[in-house]
Image (spheres, rainbow, N blue to C red):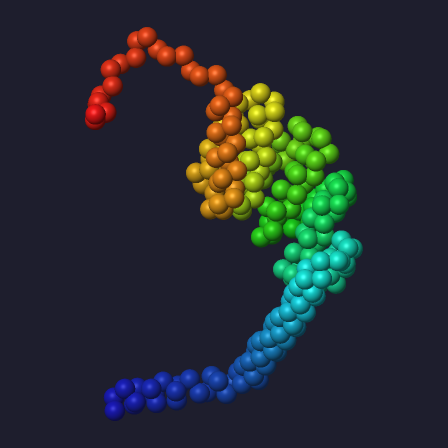
Length: 227
């Protein structure tokens, strides 16, 4: 009873204030309701837009006959949606597969400029580097691969970039740098195909590298192999 009495007394004291500010309170409540309603409408519209974009992208991928322009059309019609962004990168990747490396680079770079911190930005940066590499711009490509490793948290993109760097290092005679990149990918990648490629590259490089000369002052081994 005491708790109920205390609550009743509190409400009696509060009520005149509510009555005095009733219009303002109603206005604020109405404004909040409008904001919630608008946010809900935008959320529903965004979800519907994303579903539609995802369905369109899936149909293109399944068809396997679409041109890059079809993917760019989905991206243009669905800006800001993950499906639209994936379509943009898919279109750029198709340009790359058609050996249109300069055009692919332009699209990857444009995506990166507009979405520097996007979840797909690491892939776009990797696309820029690979496009430069395919055009024979080796030094620029190496710098671009390094930026992928340094600036993006996408582990898969970073490991692919390291593999590419290892091949560039090896071609330039920088065997130690190449070996480091191969070993890092072999140890860190969660993708089996990347690990295997890195291990194969490291093994081949090791076979080509001259053996280290044996030291005449080497200390005795701290253990003996069992017979």
